[in-house]
Length: 334
Ligand code: PMV
Picture 1: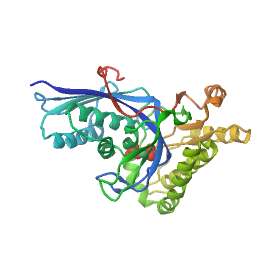
Picture 2: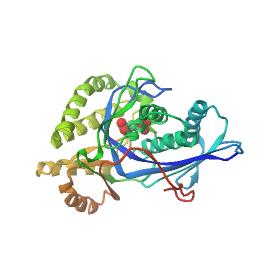
Picture 3: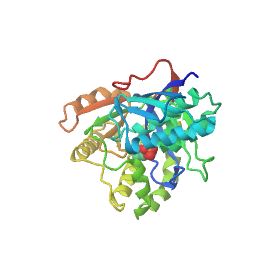
């Protein structure tokens, strides 16, 4: 029998309001709604081949055979699809990122969005985008949002059925730039999966959840009106609220490095000088700087001259996860 294969590509996304904490850990049902922008320049390319001759799943990420919890998470996702397609075939998964993995650039979002589309296409499952977003969520909550291009919302939902993502605006709705200031390329000590579990140990978790609906309302208005300062204020505030929860969890999660704070302070100084720039940070040390396109060159030059910054990725709104031709290069990823 022939292998069933497909390749898919997905962009990472940057959340303006964050998903942090689950109401159901096993099903990854988020504790709050979150809104993000899918990125064009931070991508994962994944090829999946289900084969009758494989005895076990084989997973390669960025040119290296995956083991332990990384492999297990992928195998768990493959199991979901095997169940849907009623097959026992094991699979070979080859995945590559064009940006640093597991350091706060949402590699799990693009990885599980690409894996979801590749699995569904390989097994010829007839699924809607909403179904795909729910399935992607089971691998990584934020992956549900990368199913859509441009700007998307992930609903918390009371059940697996209700926790899906939906598009809010297409990529060409608004040209917001996300300059990702990479201050460290090392992987993080505590994965976001581990972090979500700790959220409820923070006395600030409930307080943040009480704020999020109002932040999402303001954010949706800012997106609809293309009001950059309103969007930036919400994004920066919710990033700080989420990191306040992380910092006060038991045990505490401190994802920032000294260089992270250096860049945060730089962004605040730009603002004081009249430049519209706001920061947001995921579960890692790298800083995402949101700014309109006309300020990119100036900020890029400044960031590149800053010794705290190793590299800057320039991202704009990009497309949702999609099937593509060709396959992922096993030696070095995408
Ligand atoms: O999808 P996960 O489990 O990697 O969690 C994402 C968590 C944050 O990136 C910190 C926030 C978000 O909404 O993307």
